[in-house]
Amino acid sequence: MKIILDAMGGDNAPLVVLQGAAQAVEEYGVGITLVGDEEKIRQCAQENKISLKGMELVHAGQVIEMCEEPARAVRSKKDSSLVVGLRLLAQGEGDAFVSAGSTGALHVGTSLIVRTVKGIKRPALATCIPTGGTPYLLLDCGANVECRPAMLDAFATMGSVYMDRVMGIEKPTVALVNNGAEESKGTPLYQEAHQLLKVNPNLNFVGNIEPRDVPSGKANVVVCDGFVGNVILKLSEGMAKTLMGMIKNAMLSNLLGTIGLLLGKNSLMKVKKAMDSEEIGGAPLLGAAKPVIKAHGSSKAKGIKNAIRQAKTCVENDLCGTMEAALEKLQSEAKPE
Image (cartoon, rainbow, N blue to C red; front, top):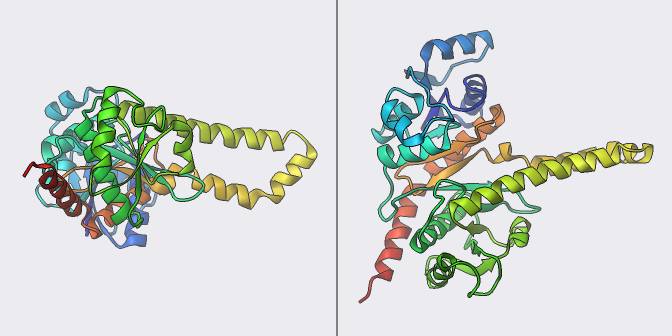
């Protein structure tokens, strides 16, 4: 298996990308194609004593910056590491693509270069978010800010297939984010989407879910438009970080608390690990014709390594083929006799 990796994408590239790639080669046995400035990659590897064993390099002299307008950047920077990597994937030069670069550019580039499975016009960014038990899949997380009801229905189907085939959850429960549990709640978009989800034969739909119940993991797949999803994602990340800081400060405020912190250090570390987005690794662009994984822009080596692991799992389970088959079934059953 060969994973194509954007060596120049992310806040800490190329160092952490190379570190994560080296760990993935050793731990998962995959081949890596590094795409980026070859001179910088080799220099970084040499300076930091990172082995490039199991990796091949494809030169790309440009980089798409986070602040650039996505569509314009993809069209104008054809020699960027992100665009070249996606092109290699589309041409069959690798099995999956991983990048910690611009989310917008990755979304646009995937749609234009790799294309989408039949029945999907725009891929959805899906992120697994930790809970007290099994993580839940939130989609869309920001790729599609404005959606139609049919798009939310397709997102739900794709999310259900992902949780089944990649996360190993049989018949995952699916819920629609709303401001109330009743079918009549929400905007016309969410009311109509609810009716579509309710009759979708591919789903184990459990109805609406209120925001206060989302973090508890009451549903395995949580569906919403990209604006709402991005707010939920960033609020969840911020709350997790804030609460861990509050607990630490409170326990360090007196001697007994400090002793308790030391005694309970292992348990707290387990909680911290469960809330660590680096453990998940990345967010797949569900609906892409081939596996595309978006790693967090601030990913460290562990996050890159786990994003590669996630890409490997997607390939092994033929995620894209399974998803396309499920969507075709949904469309055929939706047609009037």
